Amino acid sequence: MKVALNGFCGKMGQVVYNLAKNDSDIDIKYGVDKSSKIARVQNEVEGVKLTDNIFSIKDCDIVLDFSRADALIPILNYCVKNHKPLVIASTGHNLIQEKEIERASLVIPIFKSGNFSLGMQTMLELTHFASKRLDNYDIEVVETHHNKKIDVPSGSASMILKELKKTRPNAIINLGRGREGVRDSREIGVHSIRGGGVRGEHTVQFLGNNEILTITHTALSREVFGEGALKVLKFLVNKKPGLYSMKNLFE
Image (cartoon, rainbow, N blue to C red; front, side, top):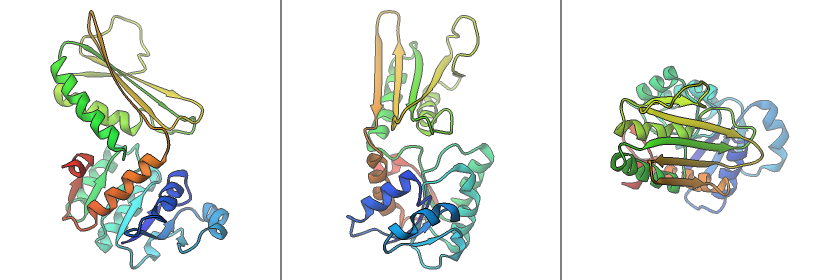
């Protein structure tokens, strides 16, 4: 399949490009990014047509977006107009953008995830089970990322919170515990640590009076996200319109 990769010049874009070289089913045919970034890499890339305008692309089979939330709308518009499947790997979308994604999924297949690691999906399932079983335990979520990470909490932490809210719909999300006072029994604390080159670590603690259960996922390299993205491209390319997630990939 011919892939248009938005965010081609970024770190994850380059990871996906290099992994795809060894995958006979995937051809990164187009790389989309800002013209200033393209100028820095265009002499080092073979077989990829680079552009700063996704609307100049006519014959790709699917679009993979590994960029930033503020680049979403042009990508959505292109995919809807040309009936192209879209994989969204960017995070930090606001409520308006989320609504636009839902609306577009009525027309095209869209796969959206804040984390493309198979291990993270397993962690989400374990978290759901533990939250249901330990329904009177306090919950704290801690996520650690590199010092260039923009969104807080991370996309993966947001996925964890969404899973917890399924079992605790009345939960109060407390970001960073920035206020004094006794902990509310309905509270789920979320703490974001930023520093160094950490790829990503997410921990959920279930704290009882006499025991603590800890579930942790640690990404050791960016390749784990790139490998997951390649699996998703193969999964989505021939799907019907709809909004898909890592849960669908497992099923």
